[in-house]
Structures are given as structure tokens and as C-alpha cells.
Length: 129
Image (tube, rainbow, N blue to C red; front, side, top):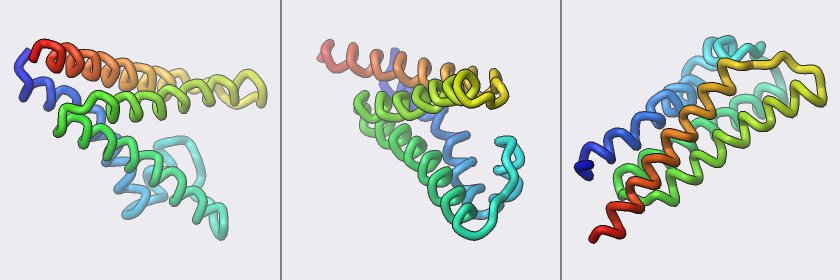
């Protein structure tokens, strides 16, 4: 696979992450609603915007940096974060009675897998050099 094409493919999962991260800054009520949560107030709002914004923007940053620099470690870091989110959603369902959010879990697993496949492809390119 062409390195430039691989970089583009690796960057794709960063797009929705960046969009959510930016929305937590510019339009937090709408992004919170799409994620099934009310927009909190006070310290809760600060935590919600800070933590969720950081989560999405960090993943986007890891993905874009890893794709641009062809560094699979950064793609794996983003995949780990997405995988942990999926695992913790399942834990919330099993242990705390939260709704089972199959759509969100599926998206996180698919994006994490996508990133791991791209990381593997970058590794293969590096070994071929």
C-alpha cells in the first residue's frame, strides 16, 4: 500500500474525534445530547467539558500525529483509549446497570481496530525499508 494513502486512511478516525472535541468547546449542549447526556452545570460542567473535550482532542491529536509522521505508536495510543472507553461502557452496563450502548461500543471497537490495522501496516512498511 502506498504510504500517502496509508497516512490518509490512518487519519480518518481522527475526524469524528476532532469534531466532537471542537464541539465540546463551541457547542457543548449539542454534542452532549448526541452522546446521550444532559449538559451539567457548575463543577460538573467544568469536568464534562474538560474531560470529554480532552478525551476527544487527545485521540484526534494522537491519530493525526501518528498518521502524518507514520508513527504506529501514536495510533496504538488512540486505539487503547477507544478500547478502554468500550470496555468501561460494558463495565458500566454489567456492574452499574447503565444502558448497553451497542452503537457507541461498536464505533469505538471499529475505530480502534481500524487504527491497529493501520499501525500494523506502518510497521510492515518500516520493516520493508
